[in-house]
Image (cartoon, rainbow, N blue to C red; front, top):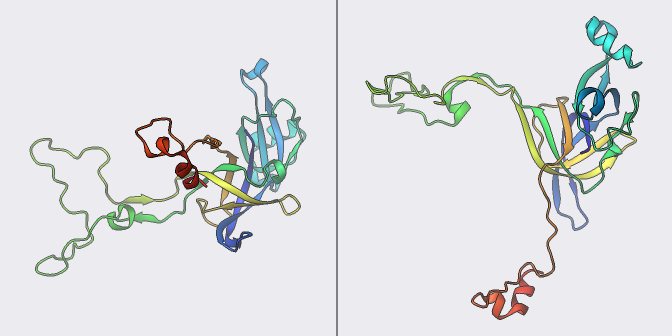
Amino acid sequence: MKAIIGKKVGMSQIFDESGRVIPVTVIEAGPCVVTQKKTAEKDGYEAVQLGYEDVPERKLTKGEMGHLKKAGIGPKKYLREFNLDNAAELELGSIVKADTFKTGDFVDITGTSKGHGYSGVIKRWGAHRGPETHGGGPVARHAGSMGSTTDPSRIFKGKIGAGQFGVETVTIQNLEVVKVDPELNMLVVRGAVPGPKNGLVTIKTTVKVHKVKQAGAGISVNPQKASGRNPQKASARTK
């Protein structure tokens, strides 16, 4: 697995070679520094802790500063642990940059969704409003009846209702990296990424499996199927 910490810069659009528009999210990825190593002998598994974004020392607690000084590294605002493929090769103080990924890679991006405060059922869950005329009263946007009578005399868990909306950890899977610029510490990925501008995100190699389509994948060996009776038509459809 490859991974890096970054910040969401915002959304834009670019054009591919055929002139089609691609909606993209620009991410400032790294540089990150290795602040701790986990080894199989000492910790039972291999991983590295990455630090991102310099911060004044007064912003950290004494425990956090002691942890970083032990590694000989300056104060960092964000620390995250990753089980990288090359964890054994990295040493304390090693730098991980945006070029750890390349164009064409597929990644999973995790961020914190935008906060919407205390919201009602219409905004939070897409519920329908009540009638606004003929005696509806001032409750058109209220939740309405919950439907519980003597049996079961309670509300089942998971019932939609008003409450805090947003500020949740959200992961978007299988986003394609369309551009990498290590000099600007920039990753450009196809599609949207959770969170506001300047929101912290973590980028990791996707857990999805990308299968390579074989040459004869569209041709069936079953003679009852059209592709089995006439493979030439099937091969023409797959082109």
